[in-house]
Length: 373
Figure 1 (cartoon, rainbow, N blue to C red):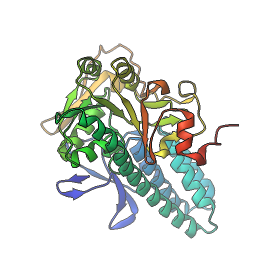
Figure 2 (cartoon, one colour; figure 1 turned 30 degrees about the vertical axis):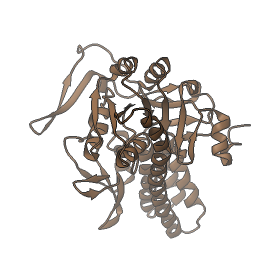
Figure 3 (cartoon, rainbow, N blue to C red; figure 1 turned 180 degrees about the vertical axis):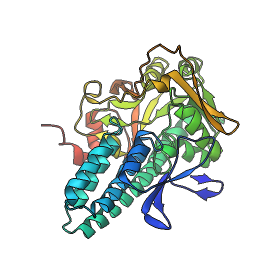
Figure 4 (spheres, helix red, strand yellow; figure 1 turned 135 degrees about the horizontal axis):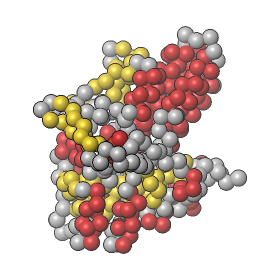
């Protein structure tokens, strides 16, 4: 994506020092655009846990780069393998729901484990980190192309009127290395001249929709409107939503979808109002070992403080304001699971398929035997 005329990814190696990873700090968006240096595994752990980087694909890429930093640090240790395994455990513990994180750590451990010398292990970690990031960007670009066909077909029925798309949370460029998942078809449609308009859920309690999705859509020139989380059903009832596209942090081999809390309610409203409900995801977001999302997908519970306090910027200062009674307890479930029967289709880098095991495995036959015995 371009910011002030310059193309950025969300994570990359520092040009002047390839032993340092650079990220866009998403905690200060949309009010500031700041690039942060990450030079150690401990710093990457904080960046993921504190959501300086967030979103399924970006978490995976951050874990890939984090393991490269771990390899650099382990090069000074007596037991290289133990050091990188420990680093992998630290990274995996930061965010339990997104499967991309553990997938990237496992891929890095496999790459390093196939080499003998420390130097070759470090080189493998660097190569693999770059591959993970490049693949994420390319897969999201392909998701955009496959999703564009859906949007183009629906747009023909609108006779030139804007196609109204509802999304939830941020499954955009900022949640991946580039392009995004749920927003990739939107950007592709906008760039091809299809008139689109996006309803942007605010996504309490961290407001990733209001802060991040609205910011990046605005930067790209995509017409959009920020709405309260609970407005989506009303808009669907009145024919103001043509389709819903969301992302996912983990999808089972049978098509159950874990995404930001509130996604399930949008899917229910979409089904009741006959609005297509699509989930966009790269293959790295599938968990091939899981079959029942409600029973098996771990749901992250975050600090109650995120619910009890609202934050924003005023006169250049970041402020927090309590919005609940001081002594009222709060619960903060980060994700929910949308059962497969509520999902119209999955948009992946290989194409669009139904949200069921047979269709998914037909698209990804190399994974068909995993988790079956």
